Length: 358
Image (cartoon, rainbow, N blue to C red):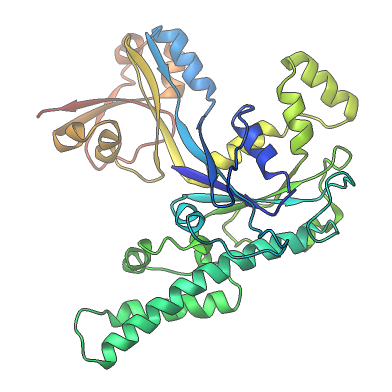
């Protein structure tokens, strides 16, 4: 699972990257390069299971975070991502779009003004143009093949791409389209940027924790997408370096309430659309992330393909039940462990032991 961060120059997106990666700097040696880090997902349930089983190894769930170079040329004019950058962006699962809402004369805005709504519209327009280019070329190729009487091209794909073209022309996200399972299969290989789940992060100044006045003017990300999140990335990064008690006192002094960093990490996780399950034992306690709606057999495959191929049953107990019992032995005695088949839909927090035969 991979989350990409995009934004215009001086938006603070690399500061957001540092915040999510616990201080790892972002490096852009060249315009078309990206910084990549593995972000561990904090989960208090994993800590509790570690106390319970005292494993030799503790492995949290994780995802890749990619900070892309700014969408800008040296001339200072925004441009569609190209070259090495665009293929990497298409390989992401979701996108964080960072826009600037803070004033700082030492860091001038590329357009000479601070307007998060316009910046968000610029970013979205760049993604739309990139997708339109792909759609137009594919439509032209299919239509040319059909005119020449070549076989193998799908009329259904052509009709679907024309729907995509119409939506993009109207500046509508593709993720809002009503698609059948077959439609999704046909579009999967294109990795459209406007089809990816997205979160708009508004980087405010320290004095604007509640978000800028222009928050309501931000472009729609789609009905199924989370609301824009406002935070001061610079302040949050400073808070992250403080001991918890000092950070809480500092937040109270500034009237900020709790830190926004945990909310942002949780929003990233939610954006990925994942369910967490656990495997436990004296050797290792580990958290695994799988797509919502995954079956027990698919969860087994996430651990190892041999477990999926030889799947027999999954022994399952809910985290809350195990937490109350304090041990697997007690949970088994109370009849809280159950055997589930391959079609069982994994619930968030399930502790699973896969029975298999190879």
